[in-house]
Image 1 (cartoon, rainbow, N blue to C red):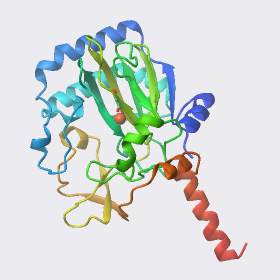
Image 2 (image 1 turned 90 degrees about the horizontal axis):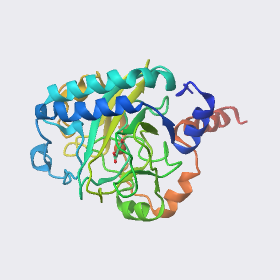
Image 3 (image 1 turned 135 degrees about the horizontal axis):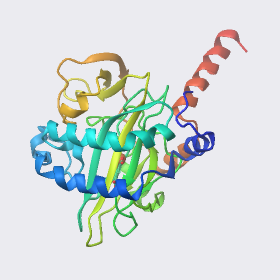
Image 4 (image 1 turned 120 degrees about the vertical axis):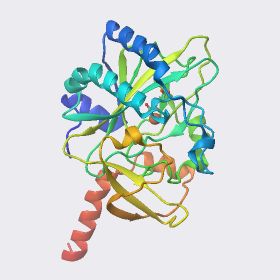
Length: 306
Ligand SMILES: O=C(O)CCC(=O)C(=O)O
Ligand SMILES: [Fe+2]
């Protein structure tokens, strides 16, 4: 398995829990990045609305992230700003990763719930791990809707994740929110590094002040970035793993049909839902990576009657 972190203690904690909280940027950088958010905001093209996605199933959008902005130039600018400030800190923590998507996440008073989800898959998670560096620019608390995670839920659910793919935890979302989340109160400038496959959520901001945060999604160098795509109308039983270049995410709106896909593989898809009991059991079961080893030994034993 490829290393994620430079420090082996952080690595083992992350592999066990699916996240770590560590100091990240300094107070000056927090201020600069906050100011740059407001300075560049006039260039935003506005958020895409569910009505504009062209997809009937698109849910009402309750959150405010740069990636669904309608102006690709604004997305490029935000990416440039955030990567520039984060890169030296990222390089001290992560073992040879590159950023692919940057978001300012704006949570105004009384709004901004981020529904329970796993981030999409951005590389083959059987072979490596992609991470999000989540860094609040104001102290992030339970009251203002901090990030909440299900510890140990990484690499165990929804292996192929993308905007058009039904989610196996959809039916038990409310149970997970009620019973399994841990809120991560985080100071401005600290960060939580998440495995993109961890199950997470954040509630509305119940304070009068803005809760502003940054997310930088990073993939390991040496691995292509991918996008899982399903054309529900033509074949709801198949998912395509498509190789994309890093610029894809700038032009891309998550619901858009992929025009000339470079298909790496087709994966058959069983649209199943899991129960809360199964969810609990799987939390302590094998990860996708360990599953590969298990399948290998199973085949080996079958062939050699070992
Ligand atoms: O900022 C939040 O509350 C949610 C962040 C999130 O979903 C992410 O960074 O993946
Ligand atoms: Fe997320």
